Image (tube, rainbow, N blue to C red; front, side, top):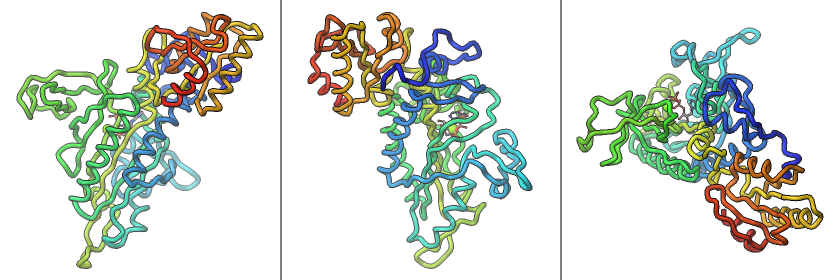
Length: 409
Ligand code: ATP
Ligand code: MG
């Protein structure tokens, strides 16, 4: 992509009404635009990152046999009345309104939609297990939306729902999901800690994935001695329940949350199956949430310095940022050749071909935070000067070296 044509520009000023680090950085660097509190547009750079995160998630979901679907965001009130969630917590969380002659709400979670959907296809034990997921925008009337992408009123969520005949099967799948979640967060460059939390309708705890950082809205009790983590909301005393050692309170961001729902929703919608003996039994459910837009915001919170963003290679909008310094014909020809040959090798390049000073280009490059910087100037000849975003070391490389290095990123 030629930067001269890129929609969205870097900005000098941090927006006045934006107090969060993640959104301030992402707005300044031209990744997102703020429409209102908790409501953001993804510009091309931001959308590329969001889609990379979604694709990491998609790959791991498919690997555990989950199938992607897309449910509506616009929900009639009837299924929500069945579970009682139209009013509790519906009226606080859900955006609700009147259509021509019926009431609707915007989806903030999808148990009320997915359970009756699956009921159409499940009759006997032979139809189970089933796991379906979607990656879609959710809407929540959040009272305080001051944390940028960490707390949107419209935000992106991956929600997976699984359906099982037996507790053992639910347990087995729950553990598979835990593994997939660990792989996803690792690939996103986040150290997410499995944390016990409230909300397990069917088990003592739900499990949250928490990333420790000072700007987190959650507080967790962390035991360094035995790697045990609990959300403060369920903590009974400061000592670790497994080893008895003193624990530390830490601020953290919840990037994922998984639950065993048991029969909470299958009861409400009468979702049953026939066992091998021909007896009707309720289907057991699990639900597994994760927020790609909150993950994006968390990466920005964790991976930056005072000059700007520092993307992990796995989620960066481009692999290389190619800077052309100088307008001489030979420099332009060499930079164009680099751009062409890297793209030909399948490497995603942002090519700063703009007519700006070296200082301005370096500042934008650091702000945008692509992992590899390549500078072509009068002194680099046919080569380019390579630098990573996180170090100050530079060296001159040839095109062949560049292609080899960057294809493995
Ligand atoms: P929180 O406690 O932070 O309000 P939650 O427990 O209500 O979140 P879940 O219903 O468990 O959230 O949603 C699943 C995932 O969706 C969360 O782990 C998080 O990654 C993401 N998420 C939830 N609410 C928001 C939001 N307002 N903005 C961005 N992401 C969100
Ligand atoms: Mg949660």
